[in-house]
Amino acid sequence: MPAMGSKSDTDLCTGGPRFKFERLIVSEPSGVALQFKEHDGRRFIVKTSAPDQQRAMKKEIELLEQLKGAEHIVSPILSSRNPLVPGKDERHGLDVPFVIMQCLENGTLEQFRYRIHKHKGRYSIGYIPNRILWAIFLCKIRACMAMAYPQSASPGKPEKPDERTPDSIAHLNMHAGNFVFDQPEPGEGEHSTVPPLKLLGFGFARRLGHNIWPTRGPPTMRPHTFDVVMDLFTDESERGKRNCGMDQNLLDVGVQMVCLITQFSYPSVSHVREVTMDEFYFRFPPHLDPELKRLVQRCLAGEPYNRPRLEELAGLIDSGVFSKTANDYADTPNRYYESDQNIRDFVQRYILDAETAPLPLLGA
Ligand SMILES: Nc1ncnc2c1ncn2[C@@H]1O[C@H](COP(=O)(O)OP(=O)(O)OP(=O)(O)O)[C@@H](O)[C@H]1O
Ligand SMILES: [Mg+2]
Image 1 (tube, rainbow, N blue to C red):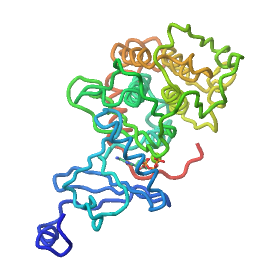
Image 2: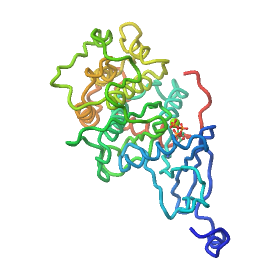
Image 3: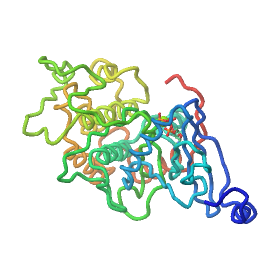
Image 4: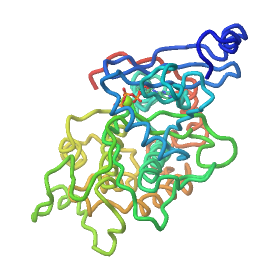
């Protein structure tokens, strides 16, 4: 990049702007995220940290670079031609670590939940059709696959396991504001109806070493009550390749699925497990597919070994997405909601046409 005031700098300013600032997405003491729009209509996000948070930001950028190419993780698009990139002498640019990312335009899972909640009774029963829940569950598990097997996706193809020892990246902040919908894809593939949901917000992510269990104490000799009540025991031969990072991500996906299904947020994993033992709480909607419910319960197992293997889970959810049709729900009271037409309308109303402005503060 030329020195300030040189001929090309002047060109940059007089040749018409290449992009314009659209909005401030996040402004916190720890940093900011800004949205821009290029002339060709493409949007991008610039996220940068406050000077005292540079280490965390650098770590986040490093992880995003390692996960680049994953279909279910936000893509960084850092370009050395970008005028914001600091020069070697560090006299230009922002001079703090930053990342330029693709802009995911269809809102967070939190915003999606809010819209459904707001329209309850008017257009919908307030719950999400099973076929959409399956699709969202698959996106989340694909994001876990990306963290276990970085760079395993090829263009247009989802993340998949391979012969490598899995990586132990744990996201550790998998709330509904950190999943954002992208655009649906043309054709008949996984995202032709329900757009891909992508994971971002890697500010707390890190690799977990052996025997690091952030949301529970060390393994005990006593079986976990939840596993006993839900009958979740797995044979040793079925445990597969796993590590603390993968186990943690699976648990977090299970928790988030319960929040989505029940349209509620819970203060702790124990609360989530309690409501999941539904004979006491009846929070799960009656129309919920029992196969989907069982998979979510398995992700919540207290003993990580009792959670499903990632490959097994991806396969089961994949067949839930691709082989289930409206006919599978024909005998349920809410069969109307599972029709192809309703699924398309639901996606249009609550994801594609929806307002993505910041949410009002909600209790739930
Ligand atoms: N690439 C993007 N496309 C669309 N929206 C984005 C993008 N990046 C961030 N956002 C929006 O900004 C919000 C905050 O971004 P992000 O999660 O990266 O920052 P944070 O919440 O401050 O950090 P962290 O989640 O790592 O603690 C997201 O919830 C999302 O609404
Ligand atoms: Mg976030």
